[in-house]
Length: 64
Image (cartoon, rainbow, N blue to C red; front, side, top):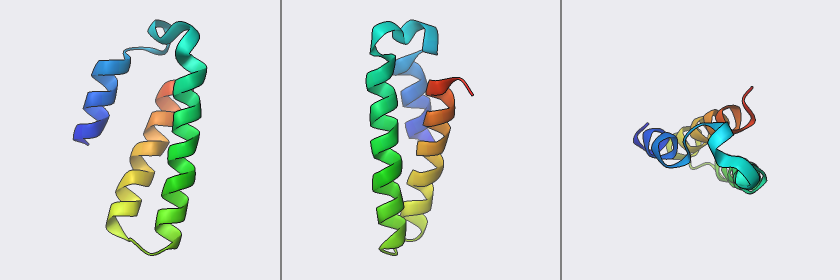
């Protein structure tokens, strides 16, 4: 959860992202893909933790 707080502080609100919003969204998608692979390979708890954080990031970035 500490990473989430860091993202929140650094990225600010989606309105503050401006033109770079697409870049952050891209990284969020890449993160989810990497996480899916990680969980598939069986890294268990770490993979699930990353998956939840990636999902929160996507919700935060897209504003949904």
